[in-house]
Image (cartoon, rainbow, N blue to C red; front, side):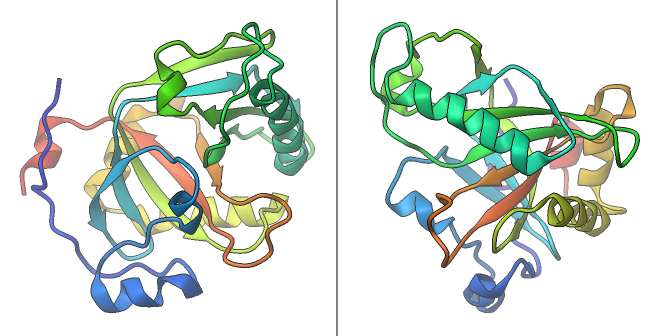
Length: 226
């Protein structure tokens, strides 16, 4: 297994939204506020760049829906979240209630055209106490992540079908000509543009909303040589 220490230094501050003023001054990433009250997956910040952040997530377990076909990310995420909410409320094989966590993530495999259905998979981070034996449930499946590397862009407000595409394009542009862009491209199956939308807030929270675009990739040894 690849062993990675902090061979990368924090670079220039990122421009992700109004809550990042402190980050611009200090050069330190801001942890999503929701994660101070509910459990989130643990990560290390490897690099804070201009418009992006590179993270390494520890091994983690996620409960995921089957692929949802829709033209709307918002509608697909709502559909998937309701299935996962029923799951944590006890609609599972153990009839066990599970604590809410963050973020809820939606993996997006975009369609070829604006009026074609895309594929969406919605996932819930399983709390540590349930990760060894997450309750199974019909229509859901477990994903076990090894240590995972992610390029991240944060944005505020509510997620919409229009702004996620804009934010994903902005993340991709900010990564251009970096070693991370090459790693992301190499990690994509069949050169498809796949990204993930992470949401940390409930629909009833209107202030300090934090959303993220994730692009996952593999790390090879040459990326660690500075």
